[in-house]
Image 1 (cartoon, rainbow, N blue to C red):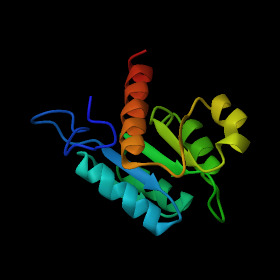
Image 2: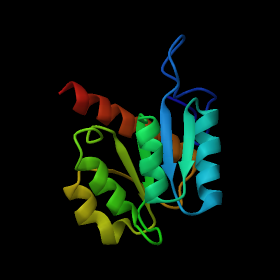
Image 3: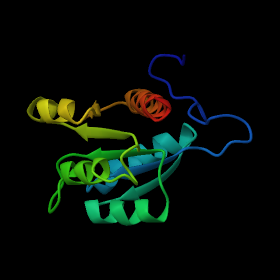
Image 4: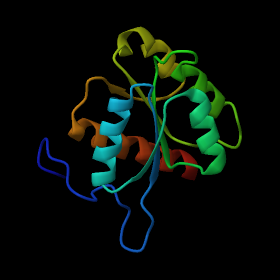
Length: 145
């Protein structure tokens, strides 16, 4: 375990000789996405950022991520559309998803129904890394089940 509040370099990297996990960050707020990308890169992940559901789907068609972190409230197409699209396809249904929202209270029943890990905004770097670790762990358990 890390010191409370501190993120260690490469703490999410799976081990020597193994590629870092690829995390797709989907958020229409460029600054939020860049911050999450910087934190996760430092913690040992490869990251890719998309600012829309369409951009996320295009990225997933190019390379399957180990985890998708998506904002729920985005203009044009909300993150719930991305989640339903991913969970509704045999090609992407096993990709772990971390839903990120400032309104977990409103979306809680829907999030629970879709068996999602949730990260409440605003979050600290430590909370982000812990949530990513847990979501990837749960995803691995789902795949091996």
